[in-house]
Amino acid sequence: MSSSFAIEVRNVFKSFKTVRAVRGVDLTILPGQFVALLGPNGAGKTTLVEMIEGIQKPDRGEIRILGMPWKGHQKELRQIIGLSLQETRYIEKLTAWETLRLFGSFFGLGIERVEEVLQLVGLEEKRKAFTINLSGGQRQRLALGIALINHPRILLLDEPTTGLDPNARREIWEILRDLRKSSDISMILTTHYMEEAQQLCEQIVIIDEGRILREGTLDQLLGEDPSLKNLDDLFTSLTGRWLHD
Image (tube, rainbow, N blue to C red; front, side, top):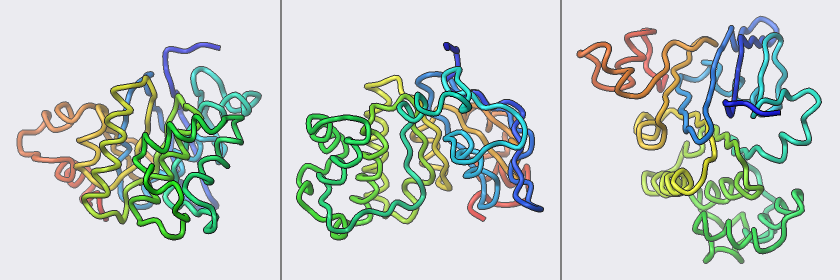
């Protein structure tokens, strides 16, 4: 089944008891496109991403990945999606190499791919280090390596640099920039960092209270009002709140 879109979200709704987390979202992402999903805590970002990655099911609407719905295509879609969630827990007495080897085995991949990913995320020198002894930045690079181990066509990163110092954050950025140059992978990145969205993504989607408020390139979003200096200004003008609230 083919499609001109990497990801299609059509009129999707999701509620949890009295909380309307996602309300009528429409979103399309092209192959090779890096998209930032911005919004404060509780905006619906994580719920939307979890539905795209198949963890949650929409109450209404349709989601297709490379033209395929989750129903009836779970096996194929699990093979082509890479995930990095807000919190990643590791087996503490496995090394970085052993952890990647474990996840690679789920996809029938051998040690050659493990070595490629270790180099890709800059953890060659930490191959024998137990995961419990890795720094925060190294743990996040390992999480990114796990997300990339299966050669994904779709990469979903949920606040991958939250809590990292500026140097560790920029190390993640460099990996993603290189990935964008060398592949046709499509990515959704949720983040609270405006600079991160601007550095990594060509398309920016602003969401709040389960609805998409605005989407476009940075120039398009800021060009509509000369008084707007950055994305935080735009979000405040739309909602009266800051993006980091």
